Length: 203
Ligand SMILES: Nc1ncnc2c1ncn2[C@@H]1O[C@H](COP(=O)(O)OP(=O)(O)O)[C@@H](O)[C@H]1O
Ligand SMILES: [Mg+2]
Picture 1 (cartoon, rainbow, N blue to C red):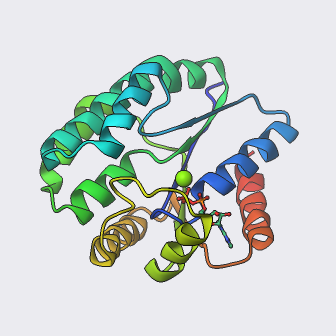
Picture 2 (cartoon, rainbow, N blue to C red; picture 1 turned 120 degrees about the horizontal axis):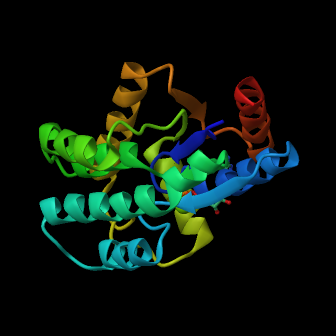
């Protein structure tokens, strides 16, 4: 039986990476074989593209094309083989992030992103997407408190993140059956409990 494909989404500082680790462990505790991965990245080539994307100034269409190039490699080499083996795949960001950041945040025409999505994903969509929603100021405060050097996206202004957040929320409204909206201002333990309930319903 094909495994399930779960993605985590939300603006920088929402808590994706924190809960990615928790979710992977929770699924393994339920006996699932889990491939834990992330985008951009997830393959040796994809990680090189990630490094470029997070550091190198580039035209916004180049950015979108590199995101989808890394995704093509990831789907082909990691995600589909894992799902076909019956493994579960838990991915920190996927194409909702491209629509939110390059589409909503940077203003790239959604039609162009949809062409790339059709080409690269060939119909592949997550079975479940957990959207961590948090006000921009809260996310910024968490990133500042963590004290890591901000990457090329994290250095963007609050208005950019407002647009990204809104684009994510618009997608959640359009696809409520796939995208579960999580109030990411809640304490970590409460969010973990929510995730546990959601996961129970699909295990
Ligand atoms: N619900 C939460 N409450 C308090 N702090 C949180 C919460 N979720 C995440 N954090 C903290 O916020 C910071 C950013 O979280 P992270 O998981 O790296 O976000 P993302 O991967 O979405 O950018 C981390 O220091 C993390 O410990
Ligand atoms: Mg992260």
